[in-house]
Amino acid sequence: MSEKNQKTVSRIKEVESTNLAPDNIRNEVIETKKAVEKDNDLLAERIHQNFKEHNVKSFDIVGAIGAGKTALLETISQRLTTKYRVLVICGDITTRVDADRIEKHNAETIQINTGRECALNAYHIHQIIKNKDLNKYDIVFIENVGNLICPSDFILGTDQRIIIVSITEGEWVVEKHPMLFKMSDIAVINKIDLKERLGTNVDKMISDAKKINPNIKVITTSAKTGENVEKLMSLMGF
Amino acid sequence: MKEELSKIEELSKEYENIDISDIKMLMQKFFTKLRNRLENYVGDYPTFIEPVYLEDNVKIGDDVLIGPNVYIGANSEIQDYVEISNTIIFENVKVGQNFKLENCIVAKNSSFNFNNLNMKNSVLFGVAESKDELKTKDF
Ligand SMILES: Nc1nc2c(ncn2[C@@H]2O[C@H](COP(=O)(O)OP(=O)(O)OP(=O)(O)O)[C@@H](O)[C@H]2O)c(=O)[nH]1
Ligand SMILES: [Mg+2]
Image (cartoon, rainbow over all chains, first blue to last red; front, side):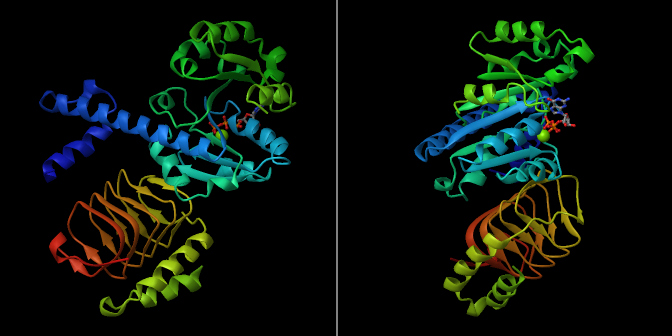
């Protein structure tokens, strides 16, 4: 590839929407985007195969900023690490805050700082597990970057995807972000302990999730009081 | 960690006399001990997969992916679109745009003043204005 072409391709990676592509490279942008998506999916498939071959249960935890992904992983890790060897991969723009929190509950952690990328992709996960001996783990959790949009573009090759929102985001949060609900196996509506205080219409959130994806299992939880955490774990297969 | 590092530095100092077998083993050992250190770099939030250890004043360009298992010595510069994993870069090194380095060692004061290179399992040395001028030793 010529240097000019390389530059174009590098630029294409940054063009979030095809609408932004100048007409003269529009085709190239579309083809490149397709190729990138395909690569991600192929890599995800290989990752999943790898997890399965090593009998590792794997989960991709996605959800809104501050919905309680880390808080739930803290309490779940606490309960699981007595029996299982748990690895948690934490995705954040920057800092090691979440990994440090989870590490206190006896899980091994790896932090990925995505910098300016708003979701983890299969390549990030691939880079980690190719350096790891998967025989050393029973469960891998991946906490994705807090975001209800970007993670829908990149599957990671896990057994299940769990989407977490909380009632503080308002009762419209589910219907406004259908894509991730479509692609998830379990929907968690967290911070249920605040229901009285906020008066959020939780039934609407539950029925919206079911409308978007009739196969999704929906559960309300509180990471704070522990309400339904065991139930969530049994939905996950523990 | 620093002990292995100085041994690797010693071994990869002279292009003519590197002992590759020792380097491989030392690198393995070094990476198991590698910790995270991400303060004091200059750049706009690149992607890091830990562990990544950056000495002071490392310059990092845009759209760069560093890690896992990367050490970069002081005052080194990593330009745009670079990807580095399982690699040791010693101090005062310059890496051009769109380099992909996997399982490599870059000797102190090296400067690669060109773009686009994909290297695996190699020690890289010296000052090079193009790929042809690059001195490498595979392992
Ligand atoms: N009342 C209440 N607070 C909660 C609950 N779950 C989490 N929180 C609080 O909500 C805040 C954000 O929780 P996190 O666990 O950091 O949320 P997160 O989804 O990991 O956030 P990001 O990783 O930044 O996207 C923290 O202050 C938690 O203590 C809950 O069930 N009830
Ligand atoms: Mg979090």
